[in-house]
Length: 113
Image (cartoon, rainbow, N blue to C red):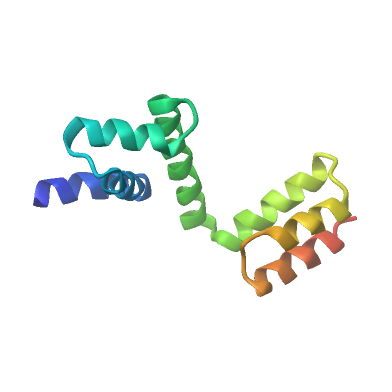
C-alpha cells in the first residue's frame, strides 16, 4: 500500500484525478484504468492522458503563482486577443468563482487601457 501511495503522490493532482475516475468506473484492473482514461478526455484514452497532462500544468501554475494571478492573466489575454471588455465581463459573470474574485477581475478589465 505504501508503494502505491508513493507512486500516486509522485503524480500529484493528475494522479488524484485518475484515482477518482478509476473508482467511479466500478471496474477493476486494466479495465478500470482504460475506462477512466477514456472518460476523462475527448478522443478516448489518448484524450484522457492529454487531459491529465493539462491538469498537471494548470495545477503547477496555480501552486506557483496562485489562482487569482492565473485567472487574471487569462482574462487579460482574452482582451489582448481581441475580445471586447463587455464580452469578457459577461464571461466573468458566468464563471463559477467567488464574488470577490469576480470583483477583482472586473476591476482589472476596467483598468485595461
